[in-house]
Image 1 (tube, rainbow, N blue to C red):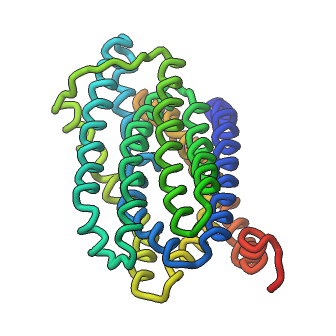
Image 2 (spheres, one colour):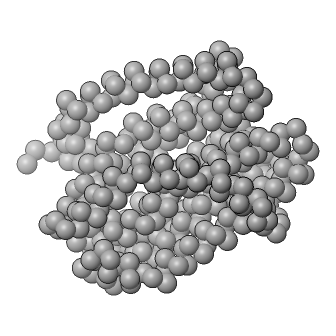
Length: 340
């Protein structure tokens, strides 16, 4: 019970931040729908996000970051110098890997456009370039967030998606003269927002928990250990988010606007996941990891049972509401209640 009460504060902070982020995310989607509609430009933006989004789910979505917390927990009884050296070595090594992946994506950008059968390749390349390089900031930021989670500091990580979405909205508005210019503005805003939210703010967050960034040479042993722990979760998560990629791939075979329609529907459907379930998971994981490392299995089981029970009943209620009120929800979100 004591551990559960300790989580109420972090869960509340993260839930509020995620709710704000989702609200701004919906504003972003509403503006995108208003400025580009269901068009070739909006489909091109979606196709440009296929590979970056898949990489994002493995990193900034938390699935690469959370596997770092149990590894950091092993240093809990060691001095901070060993912990910090291990973390910085891993951060630098992973950043090099992430940058290499983005560079490869950039090099093969035209081949990727051919694979997806993009109609407007020039627009695709223009949009894809800032999106693929923003993944470096997402990746590195996610690792820095994991260190803060380990130290039970959540507010800086929670701010990141809010800044990201605000930046997209701002640059989308600045470039909103045509649908093609709008999607480029969204992509550019994503690049700038990911740098500000996931790098600048997270460096401040690291400093707040007593860690100042410095370059430490990456060690292959640390990277190998990390990927061995992460690989099963990476594979599982890649399957879990495959539905969105399938929507985009098969939607590209349908009429213009099909991909955008799928995306607009999915954004509404995953709202409870982002606001509630993800917040509970992020806030709970450091405590669960600590209980496991210290072999407090009874407390671990009780905390998991309580969290899962609450989430189950809340999610059932939300699913029923969305199912029976789907027309009204879509009308409120995307049409603001307008009647056509």
